[in-house]
Length: 175
Image (cartoon, rainbow, N blue to C red; front, side):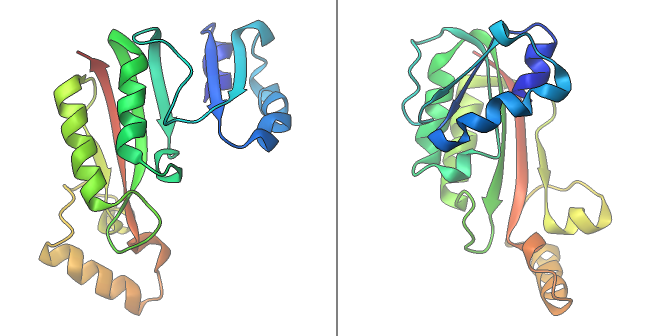
């Protein structure tokens, strides 16, 4: 995603916790041919972004929040660096059964943080295990009868990977 944005003329700064990924960054940009002066990657931690308050136009995290030790703080840090009226794009895997995704408790706090600090630009999207099979979008309620039934059926069929989490996507404007 950062390379496509740079290819469209945006100035992109990306952060990666694992410094061994640095060799991959230049190779990943080849298909979209971004201007090298528009793309910069640094080693950095989402929990402590080396950026001043309200200095960037858009913060984006695609399924990276679950890899932090404190997902709530990571989202708060993204909000800290985005300018007022700037954008926030966030996707995350949410735990519904004890997997390594963002916990249900942390997810609830993140949603509250987003609702307080941003105005949604697009409809909030949550894709549940049931939706992955039926291609329907429904609100996440891990205690609902349909959710519990779908987990049992999917478990019986041996489809476990899809029942561990739901995918949540948020696009909003910083208030």
